[in-house]
Amino acid sequence: MKLKKRKIKHAAIFFICWFAFLVFIVDGVLKFQTLVDYVGSYALVEITLLLLVFLPTLFVYKHTKE
Image (cartoon, rainbow, N blue to C red; front, side, top):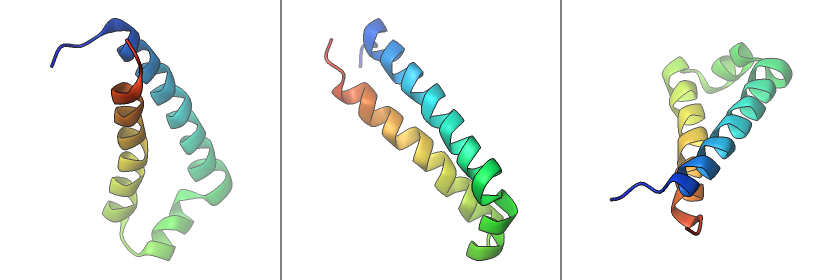
């Protein structure tokens, strides 16, 4: 798979913005400890949040036109 600069740039911008938004929501609004108490597992919350960042970023990378 050959990496394209334009696709990487768009995916990186999306990653940074989406990550900042999720950090604001999770740490500022929902409070991380509240999520852990609700779900019951620290690891499950962490993995879910990581997937919520990486999967949309991969989607943006794959669907950005060169």
